[in-house]
Length: 389
Ligand code: PLP
Image 1 (tube, rainbow, N blue to C red):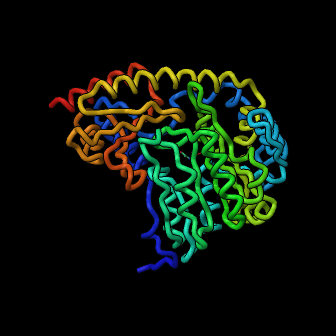
Image 2: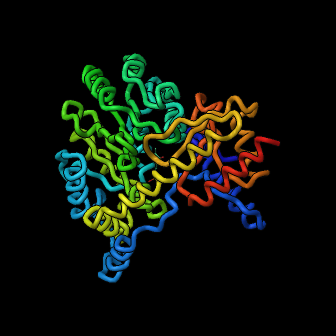
Image 3: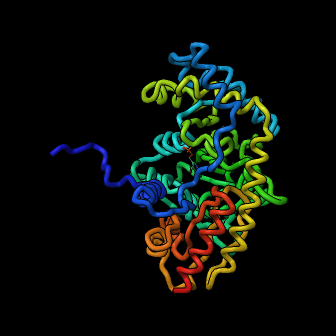
């Protein structure tokens, strides 16, 4: 019997992938399944981006690249951050990684060890907690509450810091609740974090371009006072409908960039070269494809929120960002995970139970509205029938 050195039983999972597999298996059996489970845009990658990858292959970009990513791409990322956020970032502090998730893997392994404490949002992206536990560090949940419109509270977050805290994970706009934390709260958080210069901050801004109404994304990168502590996580998956391309990037402080470059050399060497050229075309090309996708998500958001609020004993706050609705189903008499599973098996609607995102997720389910309005309306009708029976 082989025995691994790390206790792999401590590592968790992302149930959205299991739900996806089950939904696909049911569909393969001929069942009509509407997938509101997995969080990925249903749009095709815009044509000019796909073409750039094809051209890169034809142009002979098939070899290894700089482990940090090709220089034109790192420069393109710096230009994009300047254009969008009005911040100056050196291409030397940028690392191109195979998917947004990789940045959290790197940051959490760099700062997690037995005895350390890592703060993370609950409900939040499941990999945060899973990776924290894998490293042996203590996961300390930052509560994300419905009554606070699913924003985090700066005071509450700061009150959780101890002399053992090595890393704080922040996510706005957020998965799974769709919260966008307002600027005043982020200002307060940053002011407090300045008093803890030895605490690293991982800001997951993968949904940064997906906010609605008057809600604006505030990047932690726009606070020079915490630049030495900050690791920014971003990528192409959600913004440009590129989940399967596995393209992400991070911005690291001077003190960490060379260490993280070595971790890249020791593991994936470099990201797929044609995909990097596609990533550059995405950033340098027309941005109306992003605006169009966000406008379509906004239309769907209104349909799903209205529909959910019309279901018996269900209430749903209007999400301010990302593409998830997180309705409160506690008054339906169902528990979250059994309800998500029954919705899939009986009603043919894939959703994710709130507890898959943390203990505070009980009483909620997550629905991704990255699906057509027609499918969303059909799913709502099926949910109504399920709840009435
Ligand atoms: N961060 C958050 C909050 C996410 O929801 C996701 C994907 O669902 C990721 C990061 C990872 O993105 P990628 O698919 O690029 O690894």
